[in-house]
Structure formats: C-alpha cells, structure tokens
Image (cartoon, rainbow, N blue to C red):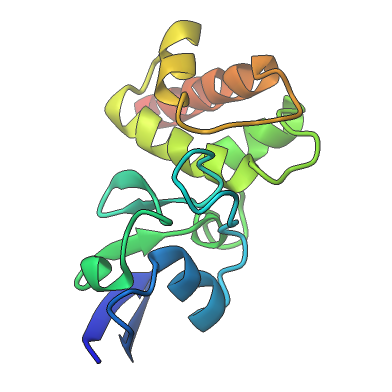
Length: 159
C-alpha cells in the first residue's frame, strides 16, 4: 500500500492508505475529522469541501494518495487558538444556516473564495459558491455572512 505524508490542521500524519481511498474518508475515518461531511460522494453538493494547499477542493473527488505532501485545512482547523475564524463567526451571527449539514463545506469554500477575491459582490459570492448546495436556507444569509466576514477580514488586515 502507498504511504502518504500529509499535514492536516497543522499536524503531520504519515499513513499507509489504499490507492482508492478518498480524502474525505481518510479525514473522517482515519483522522477523526468528522466536521468534513459526506453528502453525495459525486461532487455535486460540496459538503465535503476542505482547503488543500490554499485551494478549496471537494474531498470526495480527491484520492488520499493525491494529497501526499499537501497541507489540508478542515473546518476543525479553521479556528485559531479557540477563536472562531471570521467566516465561522459570520455564519453564526448572520444566521447563515438551518440544519447545518452544508455549513462546514460552505465555510471552507468561502475561505477559498475570499483568498481569490477578498471583497466580492453578492453576485460574485453566489458564483463562487455555486458548487456548494444548501437545501434549507435560500442562500441570502450565506451571501450576507461571506460579505460580513470579508469586511471584517479586510478591516483586520488594514489595522
């Protein structure tokens, strides 16, 4: 079996994995990162989105062996020393969730979106998150949360 080395949420892991093991299953089943949800296993919903080497990816479309040598951030690794990331805080304060199942993937996709576009318009947020589905909210508060977090992150960067 192939051996991989991957840094997940700031911790290095080295494991033998089956070549067909998906990254989502490696994160959840081997590492206990259960905040990364399994939604569809077909890349349609985005519930499993993580950030890998600075890009948001659907972890159900990545084999664990493809993550060898990568830095992966899950929703569990987004908080900094117990302080919520601005996106986590904004999703909470703007009521950008109902059942919460899509929320980790939405937040992680938003991390990638804001890395590429730190001040997106409503339309750019909608376009940037179009690969992530929410069956509950209607998206308006999700868009509002991303814009709120973007403003907070921009304000924090200019201090």
